[in-house]
Image 1 (cartoon, rainbow, N blue to C red):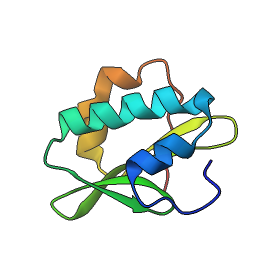
Image 2 (cartoon, rainbow, N blue to C red):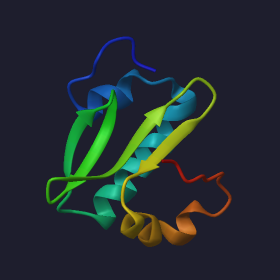
Image 3 (cartoon, one colour):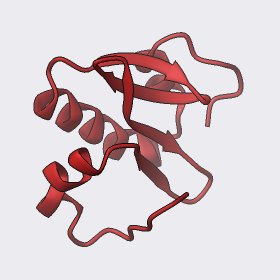
Image 4 (cartoon, rainbow, N blue to C red):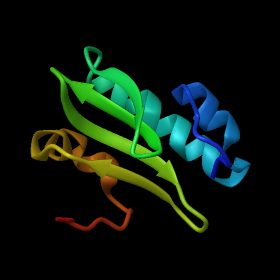
Length: 92
């Protein structure tokens, strides 16, 4: 968890503990591969990907876990098998 607001996704990833960094970098790469037209932003204090101006997914390090936040049911369906073995939940 970074102690100050990061200005880029690379800066954010460089600032998270090593225990989370590899998983978040992998998620970052997978999102970029699946959605090459997505733009990268820092929003809500985390790396956020937008597609056609709309939030698609965000990634974040927490104290005891890493999180993938999906704003699009289409994106969730595309990720499919990659989420097997992970705890998932639907938010509001």
